[in-house]
Length: 111
Length: 113
Image (cartoon, rainbow over the protein chains, first blue to last red):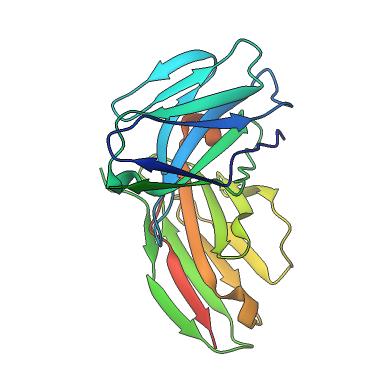
């Protein structure tokens, strides 16, 4: 199971773009990269998932370099409501997916 | 469509008692996973069930157990409760597993006194 490493915390201001990078040196060929967002006392919420290159949806973009040993979650123009913990997960979901959440990155958006 | 439903939302138990928590996954989802979240330890994986079979288990003592029914609903049980079991217990469902992303419930807040 690929272990992930993320910064413990990040600060930003409203309106800025925030990039959170996750390292996963032992990622396997079949593994996908998934990001979740969690607010206090709530369950994590799925943000985005990708395998390689770039994925974009209505809330974020995910950049994955060719070697796939890292990935970057990009949040455009953050607002105060984006203050949350962001988790990066790696796994293939086949044969039993033992989802292991790391410590996550605590993003604090200031006015 | 309805999300993942966990009941009860809050629970207070006494040390030594046992507790059963329930999780109803999204319709059609066959994988259900359980997590314990505490301020000190973060999100810890308990176990995952798929089609009524436990196919993954985390590093928790045998006091923590679970099961899944034919309709994919799942329960987890904690026996002989300890103060350290106080936590937010989260359930997540997925079609077949993590590849397609999990949808989490709002959790059950368990307080052991």
